[in-house]
Image (cartoon, rainbow, N blue to C red; front, top):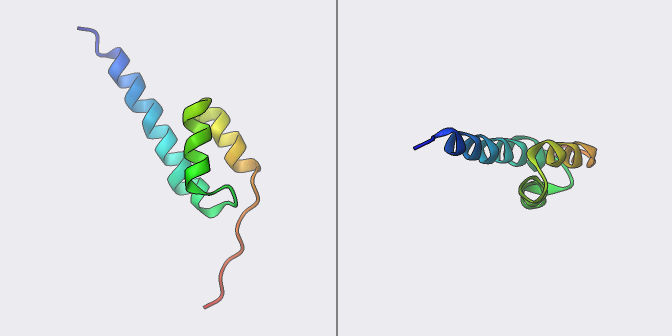
Length: 61
């Protein structure tokens, strides 16, 4: 059995998670929309969409 497919799928979902969790959370697009665009298109285009969104302001405590 060829495991290259499993490696590519794991890499695809790993990149999608990274983009959504660590970049999308601090942007106006948010976590869920960042995941949506990364899975729907590709993680690279999802990264572009996420980075084109505005950053959230820091909250004062």
